[in-house]
Length: 260
Image 1 (cartoon, rainbow, N blue to C red):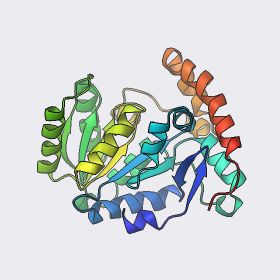
Image 2 (cartoon, rainbow, N blue to C red; image 1 turned 45 degrees about the horizontal axis):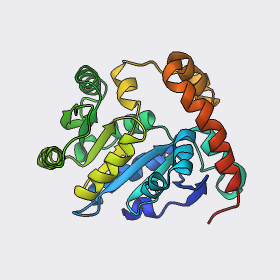
Image 3 (tube, one colour; image 1 turned 120 degrees about the horizontal axis):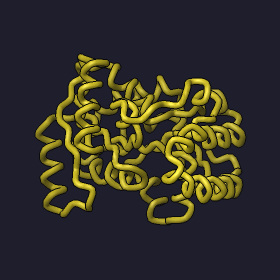
Image 4 (tube, rainbow, N blue to C red; image 1 turned 180 degrees about the vertical axis):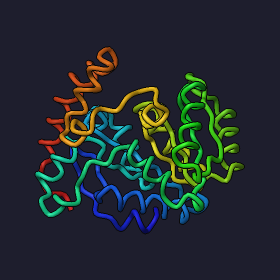
């Protein structure tokens, strides 16, 4: 584990252990960590929200994945950050929401000459738009490679070939947009195989590519983004919210003791 990231405070919400720092500090730590990793010491970064915590509460294997020694979990969601601040007042100022799209944008604009980015996920059309928009917004960012894997599970040989393409590209950061929880398993697998920082950033590909619209800033800053997203994708998100939110609250309240 990178000493930069390992040195940040960590506390639990609902059984998931989060790394806490303001977003600009985490962006810097991710960029620095990508320069530090060596063979066998990759880092898996998860952007965990209320649904992630609910899934971990219901699935011990998924919970163990998020607790892997090479895993870093960041608070992608106001409910996670709110519970964290409420039960850990010593970290209230530091414990902020850290979203995948904003982190990806921050890293792409930071130290571009020292980072090489690999994009893994999305449809071929979304991936093409993503590469074009990154090139337009952050022209100095180095895109080392990109690919849209098939929707089905890959064979062992296909995964080995994919890893070799990433390795040959010289990438230091691998951005993975495959949806939760699939992308969390994939970044852990990549980090175990390659000396990179692998980040499971979910909808970041769609937002930066422009295939999905962001909620207005006032909704993002007040914790109401979920209402906008629910209205935009009711069929996909209704079950997630109706099942996940109550389970998250139960898990968070069950583990409400301060965890140092």
